[in-house]
Image 1: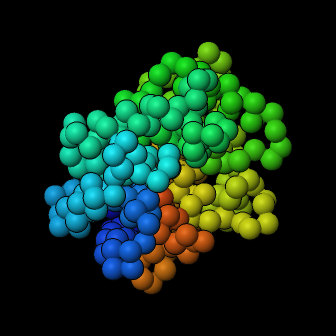
Image 2 (image 1 turned 90 degrees about the vertical axis):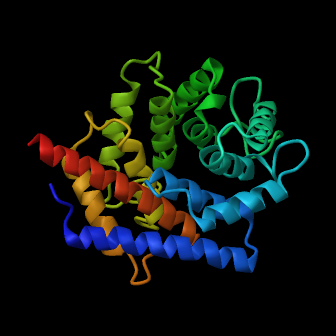
Image 3 (image 1 turned 180 degrees about the vertical axis):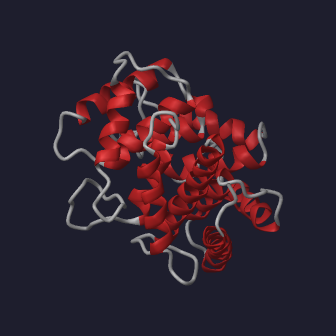
Length: 279
């Protein structure tokens, strides 16, 4: 299947807009976490990292890294380390950052936003996905246990389920509950709103958003053989229709929502192309 021209334009517009956003953030001296997140998700979307923007970002990451190996906190360090790990794997900066992040891990295997914060699915799941070298059996067991508890709560938050799926797949983790992955996928698909996007949960008053939709699609795409292609096609349609003329997507933190939307859109198109080839 040849990707339709309109979808190619969506990707091209998104790529240019996000690269321009990084450059604009440099000028405005926006916090490093926000720049690094864009760069990581662009890289995960297939962008060649050998460009001047990434070189500039790597220099700023090195400049702002603290002597102990971290940056401002766990989340900042997650994104800065993930970027450097993709850009200059096995460098001393990456090694010291990974050591610092390991030191912030709680005894139960989880991470919070800070060393004193409670363990959080959102932080732990993303760390285990973007930096799988930090994974341990205790971390994955904690994530399974915590997500199982969350499934008993109403409302259940879509992004927590998606980050859990991403962490499980990246680390080839098979939950002790053999039905948990299938149950989570089925639930996440059912959480798609009537407009084909996702929000924090189905029917939540704020409605669908690029961030929640992008994260939900990214989670589902971890298990391509288990998902419903129609759900994916409808999610892609929602993202395509919501893209702004400037190439970004409307969200509270516009670069975060746009980065996840772009990441999910490119991954979903690759999935749909492969499905078409299979016939």
